[in-house]
Image 1 (tube, one colour):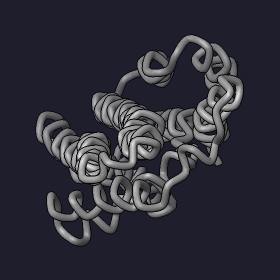
Image 2: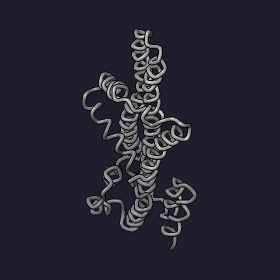
Image 3: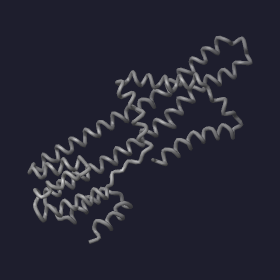
Image 4: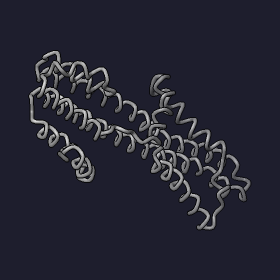
Length: 260
């Protein structure tokens, strides 16, 4: 579970409520079911209009990923690639074939399978980078759906405000009700802004971070697979792979993989 996402959501809405209370307002003043339905459900149904049914229904599974910490096990990947490198240098590339079935990572398995089959390095790179680019495309499409919701919510908020103002202007005879009715009309704008700025835009940022992390790991695997095929020294391979990690993680992993 990604604690930062939970703290972020609770903290963001908590600060809005806290600011209202400290400012002398009432939380009940911003609670309005019709406004909520128009903004949240209205923007969601507009989202369904923008995408296929499966994509629209799948947006909740995409958002749920922001509350999970993706585990890519970079150290484990580096250790496995180093072990394959040592075996390949000692026994030859064909000796890797028996080890491939135990691999959990399909991307690495496909790359090493190509190496064992004697595929040219340029073709291996092209095939693995093609798969990587397709993964990035799928991620980008999912992120775009959430981003579209962020774009639609404020518009539905303004639409709700206009609808509320129309109703208020039709009843100007009751002057005492003008102020409360106007305040209620503005609640939909508030809801639209909150859905976009407190939820959907941060969700997009978190998902882009996940995509960048997974892309980095797969680029590291490509470099490792090609280095194994080229017959690079295992220590040189480790130094190449460690370059993909940030300085903090690199120093910790380096002590393990280069301790000999």
